[in-house]
Length: 501
Image (tube, rainbow, N blue to C red; front, side, top):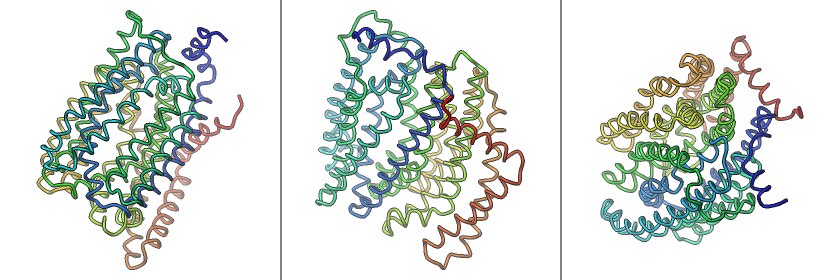
């Protein structure tokens, strides 16, 4: 096969439309399996590192990560999503985008190194100088992977992506644990964050055998740059909103409070992301292929959010009820204060996976990143006000501010996002009302059960509460025809994984 023919096959997606439903279902199943392996690795590493390191170690890295994570947004410039979303692309365009990403990543590394003294000044912590410089190296690896990952997603090669994700995380986890065991303290977390993107870069280059050519002027990337520019602008505002809580805590409450908050936050997101991550990875390429088919777009989206609601809402409610026991089991007794923070944040996470689809899926797949940026400006203003008000009560107050802000924005986020789509706001709430109501009912029975077992051991409380809650959820789901219809619909989608036609 000639190089031109190979590139044509890499960039074309017409064959994917022939069986998009089955590809999406199988891709979701494969990605879920990969996420299950990643959950095991992340949870295991969290349990081990939380016992080998101190809250201050995690707090120091979180303080720098809030800054470097913001700068990391610019390495992509939204160009990976532009590659996935655009109907037609060619070798010249992707080569040009590749070199743009590499140039930007190299520049960001140098900027981060230059900013290291300012990070030390802002936090008043001299240990952050070398830590910031070391973490800046991750930019190089990130820039090398952007377009290769995008091409794999565009072709819906979810098996390759799942294997690479799992292997790269394994490399990072093993590095972090080995270094922590050797007594390197917070440097073990730094080395873990460098080993993961290095392995990721090597993996995607092996899996995607497309190789960039020289950049080409007037290759037709202007539209893709505009799409990516608004998406990056949204990511900047959104990142600021999601990390201002940690920045404020680091500045005014110190490393220990930041450590408690950041670990509670990451522990909560860890299992949720294992569910929403695979669904987003499948939904965005699939919806992008349906952007000119309104009815198919609407049907796919509503089925996907119903699935997300049934998978995440009961799960998050259970974590809310058992927050103290979960933190004690996973992190250990010295992290006890993080349990209260975890519970307050979990109250926000009940709706977050569903509301995030309006932002991450609708705007992106319909090419409406300009409106996406406008929404970010509105929502960020609300979150900033909530964070600042809650700061006077420390980490717990900031967590409460995060939760209150989330509930204020539930209706507006859908009203704004769906305005120029084939989906109505009422469609969304009618599709998630059943799992929400059942989850709340399940949570109440778990809370009552936990109260009766409070004198028993932690394991007994967790097992008994989950058993009672699960039985209540199952009985009501089976007894209500409308809910049972939802369950059957979800199973019918899952059945596509195993069908050949």
